[in-house]
Length: 465
Image (cartoon, rainbow, N blue to C red; front, side, top):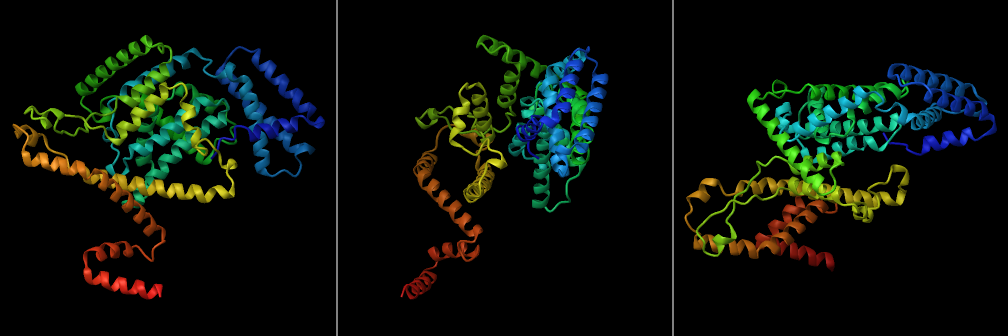
């Protein structure tokens, strides 16, 4: 589902410019003026707007200007009317109740704290379905919700977030030969993603969608996913030690530690001139204060120079590096320029042409293959990490180990080249450019078996002749 930020509104305004639409124009303007003059009353405002939408939709269908239009076109007109009306009324109806503003702040603060120590295991998310790197895509979709004013566009941000999660869970179940995931698998992941995304004014955004999205359109899949995020926010609002299967004392200790971090980050942000950008502070906090339990121990440079003292060094994971870069982008006032060399990043489907498909598909395949190979490579590499006991048992640096270090260092460039060749070979094999996947193995066998080499050489010469 796409956010039609321009099409539906443009079509609606074009039709409203026609002379035969004069009555509609006067009705819309009159409604906006009279509505804006009334004191805010969320329940009454909701009923008034929904009633106006229903009457206008019926009038559109009966008007000659829309005769012969398909249901899709009539829907687009309804979305255009909704967008136009709600953009005009947005300052008047969004978070107009002081209680909603308070609820927004409470929810935001609670998520800012809990997100620092919660893990997928706390929400009973099975290891099979855990994929925090890919969940970042879902988080980014949800974080777009404050970029828009129309209820439909805000809802689409939620739906896109949910669809990313749903697709990831489905792919994981297929890969592991498990049953298709249901609500029991989906909701915990949505809760975790929502906590990590923590968009400001989430409470008010959900109420706004609930009140002002056309009732005829808040059905089916949209209603299902919207109900799920309401459940997720309700769970987060009432989250405690019991709901996270955590000891009460441990939960309180984690919350106190999180409060201390928020306080420190807040003061640092204020000193650097960004104290009033609370959302940026909490986003940077979310990205920087990740779990610190992935530590690899290694020899320090002092050990290489003969010093017998051993130091423990934290090696940043891929996730850490991604989060560090994201936090830097948040602070960079010219970050948009960095993405200018990626022309399709902010494109919509309507911007693409047939000629773009082949290049995009090739780029996608390269990305997937290299990501999978990198993931497998990292998984194998972790088993080679030196243990704490081994490092502590060493009182000095062994000469044989020193030679191993030098050998490993000198082979870095060669390893990189071999890795790139391996990835390229794998891509060609899986894409069908070779006769079949087994040919990749045949190449390796040729290198080790002289007899096979001779047979292949003879065959090649025959082919050339």
